[in-house]
Length: 95
Image (cartoon, rainbow, N blue to C red; front, side, top):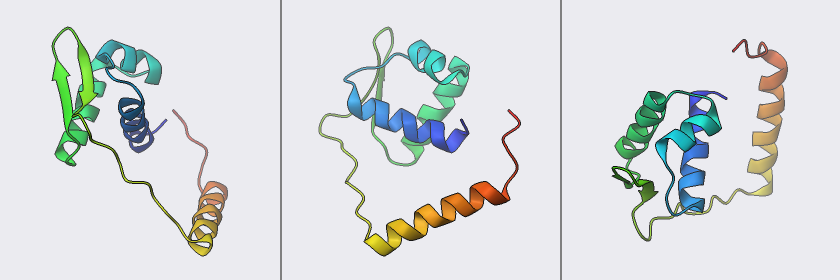
């Protein structure tokens, strides 16, 4: 999983659960705890209100939710086509 995908997954997990612990996130995504800290900091810098409490874990500020993304049929088709084309034209991941 690349960094962008992992950060997006972190945000989704933070939205889905009340509190998550750093070591739990590191194990889930197969990265170091330090990487999780950097990813959480990236979310904070992007304006996501991540709250952390020592010994407890991380959560999002009460009431924070990402707005749903709405695409037209044409936009969704274009995104899927671009994804399939990019997958065919790029090398397989080496990690």
